Image (cartoon, rainbow, N blue to C red; front, top):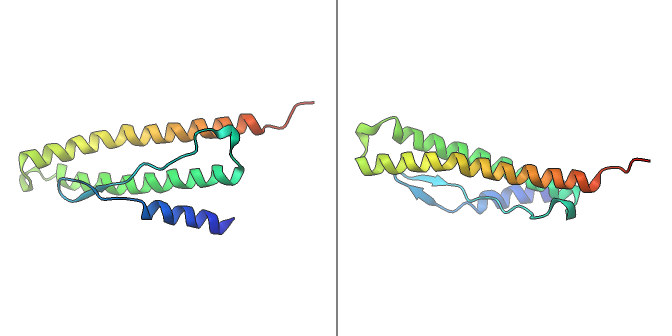
Length: 118
């Protein structure tokens, strides 16, 4: 089980493609989460959690890179600075949407796997 979790995390990091914003910042790829939490195993739920955590960590690095551009406008052209600002502003709702997907996945898994009341 530990091997599969580690493999999933490694695959996430290997799957990041360079979607470059101005200044060389790399946006992480969105994790591919299962669609239906009611049909997955506990292990798959944990793998999904690890994918989301890895994405959040990579997205934080991406936002920090963009911050270094946004906070030093004198070092960049107006177009590059604006592009970095737009990329930063889009990174937040994208991350929130991914967390929302995971929360729904988790709620659906819990609903499908609750112990029956007798």
